[in-house]
Length: 346
Ligand SMILES: Nc1ncnc2c1ncn2[C@@H]1O[C@H](COP(=O)(O)OP(=O)(O)O)[C@@H](O)[C@H]1O
Ligand SMILES: [Mg+2]
Image (cartoon, rainbow, N blue to C red; front, top):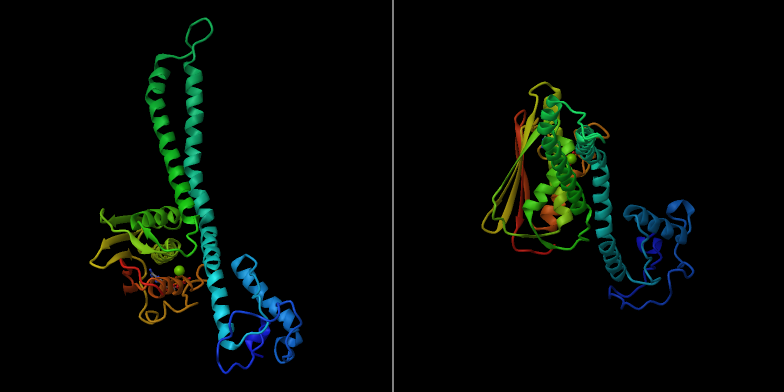
């Protein structure tokens, strides 16, 4: 059965001439007289159409309006499907991004919890200190010289740490806000320094136990025309891969802590971001496969093999940029991303 029939769009003979966008019956009309029994285990065309729309609905997390047509030729059908997929694509990418945030959520909660904990400890100390310094009703003091000296030393420190902790929380929350703000597939003039800082903050819990991170960015970076959400995904995927590659070295006892370096440079016609790790490196046998969808050398639950495939399609297909790596097994890997400064469409 042609796919057009499944979704309720019968193919009619127009000798390949695309049909105008006027339609002769709504989708809810009776199914076209095509054979409903040749695929789909005997389900009716209506059922199969409904199932297909539900699958898309489940994928994007929002209902998809059914095409308002029942009779179209193949070319018009393809055009309509393409426009439908284009409509839902930003939603799909947004869902994917939310999923990525969901995966990072536990780590981010932990990142926020740590400063909140010491803010709370410091505020409790400040309360005690002030109670101690409070003179009695008769004007005498409850505090001796030694306690007074201690309080004088410690109170400013406690305030400083509280402010630092609050600033850390503000930084994490604002990074989260930037990351979860959907750019809906729109190109923007994007500040790469901001993108790099945001991704390093939200991914911190993924790498901080195994690696340090150094960020080295030329202060004067031109804005890059790109889809902000997409570039967040690319960087997050590559940073998390770097953390995994380093973690495997730490687990093998090669060193206690590795290093992830993120560099960004403006070149004549593009911006280049390089992410360097001193992790396990990519084996020669895997070199040609890492950008393949679903290729992963990681344990189930740790990798799905989609990160680099998605990164490749975002950088190369969508942004007409370049993405490549060099790697020495046992020594480390560098991923390079180049994004053109002149926007070119897909
Ligand atoms: N920085 C890196 N160091 C070593 N191997 C890497 C690195 N980045 C990617 N790889 C390899 O490429 C594979 C595919 O990566 P990816 O598409 O992100 O999928 P996943 O991380 O889910 O396995 C990984 O399983 C790993 O073998
Ligand atoms: Mg990955």
